[in-house]
Amino acid sequence: MGSLNGVKKTGNWLVFYLSIVSGSILAAIVIGWLSYDLVSRQLHLAAQMQMSQATLMHEFNRLMRYLVLPGGQSLVLPHFKMSANGLAHFKEVKHLFLLTAVIFLVTIVPALRGWRRDFKSGRQWRYIRPMQVALVMPIVIGLIASVSFDRFFVLFHELLFRNLDWQFDPLLDPIILVLPEQYFMLCFICFFVILEGLFLIILWRAKKSLKIY
Image 1: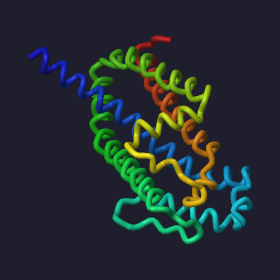
Image 2: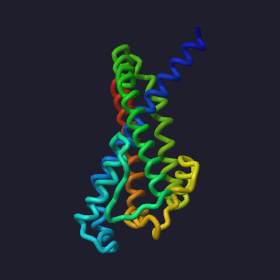
Image 3: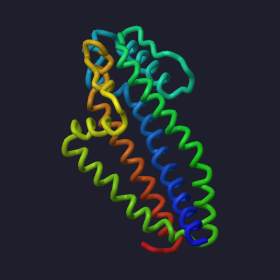
């Protein structure tokens, strides 16, 4: 019976963490999408590609709609030729985005129910130590990324993808020229800030309910 309770407790915490992480990823994707216009203007990406800002945004929005919307539609960017490897990589990214959305939708309701149940029953203290521990990991990863974002970016892709399709050749996949490192860095920063913010809010709420400051 004790082992069964332990498995259930572990499962509940896993669901809780997955809801927070997946929600943070989705929020970072949305913010990254909304901020691309500003980033591209600051870096003069449209001018570098000899196209208007409106054309660049039209192409970027087509790409993002392909990545985040379910369905078997093909990726077609009229102003950017795409290699077979480039298309395959974006298809993998699409699957990861949709998987993240599914994880969030599956876990958010039980996570919120567990949160409300624990607070109503006076067990909010259970969240203090896990949130304190959880706060450390994003900081550690963020520090590693800040030392060498190039290396971190490579390791990130090596962990997520089993092939080298993500290593775009600008001659074959010029889309990579308008997806610079600075943009991806902004997306990662947004993710870590949102994740840390959620952990802090949960920790603050748990301590406040117990009047621990």
